[in-house]
Length: 496
Image 1: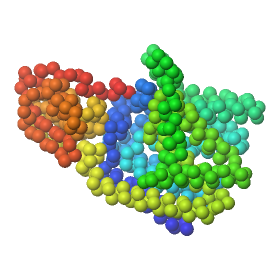
Image 2: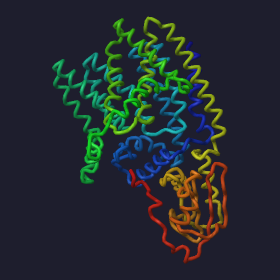
Image 3: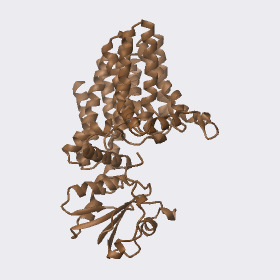
């Protein structure tokens, strides 16, 4: 069986590397934003906050720092950073095997490693800060369970540090999980009268010191936003949290992606089957602390999520999935071992087919999709291939931000010997416009060009791409260059 295990791991690694092997990654707005943050870190060397979160809050900069060495090695090339994502998936697979083996058995460790490596093959085409939180949460959980069962401070210290790291990476799961953890730890320390361990809990605010420094430097703007976010009041009355009960219940039971493709509520059945397995294990007194801890954190997350005055979004939830997979794989140790083994094989085979299908579908994405790095860099090459030695350019996107194309232009600017001016009218000026919804006249790039960039003459050259992107080249007189344009068309990163 060992050769089969390693063969499947190699297959999963190839699938995880599929996009970067073809010189591409998924480069949407969030990924483009991350690369602009890497650019900012490269310039400033020290940053205190990361990408913008809900409620005008900010995640920490840990993901930016973690990715920065790959950014430096690749001189800003996203494909090199994509190889780092594959490496991160490999590390997560090794850690998953260690966790499953330490908590249960080698067969469980092997099953868990296979499940994690295959699931991550769906994500390595474009990773961001929630993915790092997802990878850390099983290790965080492992340290918690080990501390509860052993009272060894050697597990408490990394658990508390990991709590801070998860908050840095993704606030939505990080804050509820940390709050649940602190509550449970205070109770355990009191119950066992190990008050000397209380000092370890002070590591949590230390790991979040960057937020405190930023808040002090900016007149407590984060504290004010946080209070506004968690307060139960909205407008003149109490916020009606009940409107999102259905959202929480649906996601709690049916959205854990045990099956990556779920055409008809199969994940609901699988999750209920997992709960039945947990009930059997508890009745047989197997791994009681572990299963109770899982239920405490998993259900507790959904209860505390009501602090958020809105629905739970996908990137709030998927950081929990690897923890769910650990518990699912652990059922190999229950009395119905054969049944759960067969179920695992069926699920794994279906997910493998989905991953292979994604690899096949990539041929319709690479170099053609609007979120393909290979395509976006091809658009930039069209701009930079002109004979002029200097030019200005403007980038348009319906979301105003346009992070993906902005970073693409920045990347080619750094690697060009031409004089390039972003969002400035020059004798030769290029406009690069992302696809827009055709039904809204105010979303058309022509409206943006005329009313905001204020260029009204006909272009010298136009290239329209099949996915809706457009590149236009203008030759402007001195008077045309002096025409004022709306500075709001370039918000930069100030929305962070």
